[in-house]
Length: 415
Image 1 (cartoon, one colour):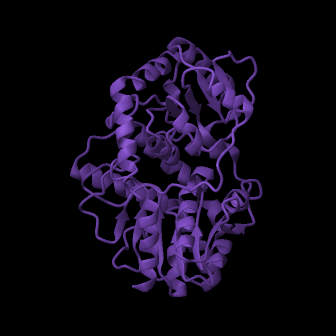
Image 2 (cartoon, rainbow, N blue to C red):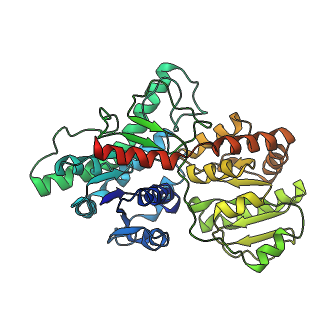
Image 3 (spheres, helix red, strand yellow):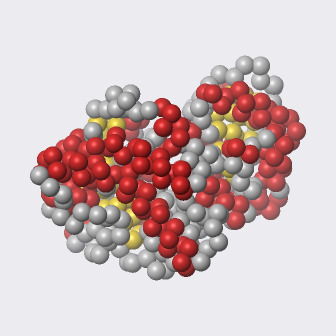
């Protein structure tokens, strides 16, 4: 059994579901471990799930703190928020460790470093699986500084120390607390494990296209980046008649959705901005994931959650918050991006889309107005941006990151 330790929201789990799908194709038994509110979603793909019997409510997670985490727009705010979140990991570490028992290999999200130390304790291989590039390099700035700081060898290395330091800060207390209680002391070689890829039994795998961020030449040979990890949908999606009719009733619309970073208290203000911006740009729109919205004009429809793989190919451009998974889905679909980053690495993906000339200039959520959103829509639909987006999608289609990384995992078992 291969066990994958996951953390985060629906978008965070999707790359790991993709990995699990590929591992099953290679004949491996695999399960994903995470909080119980993700169980139904993961099992819907036919993947076994080890459910941590906790969620944000049972952990008494401060909703204000969660909102702060989703709106941390600079490294200092991120660091302070990660520091506040440390205590919640301690209460569930024992269940994560229990899921590792009787496994032949552990794959862990960078936010669940207990996976590395559990594997060492159990004498089995471990693999760091990251949804973004996170290893030190002089070649490019990390995702928490990209687009904010000029790229220099020194600045770049420092930015990775910052990124890894914050991720380690968020998870080390859970490892420390559990280990002291369970084993009477700290794990051997206790410390940040993100650069310990010294052999084929402990590789790292990264979900990112080399056409978006090229694999740095100064990474060691055990760090693998072969492309994005895209989920294979089990069935062909069938849209509602209302959506189907809307899509066929005029020009391709603009998709607008802000995923899990959207909060209800933002609904009225965001709706007003979106409606005005679409009117100013003369475009139709699909607003996704903001619930029912009354009195929308005929050129706009509101829908619930929908597979990006199905919808993005049917719209003119995608406007979103810049989550790594949503950004990748937009790139894969070959349509321009309009990214409104809220926090954390979203700013990096927004800047990268602009630098690759497949998207408009980033509009931070605090600066969003109907005027600059309308301007961004016009820019994104310029012929050069549309053509560049199609070219990027063709290049991404030449990669099969999830297949190649799944092979790395299987090979590590034979090393």
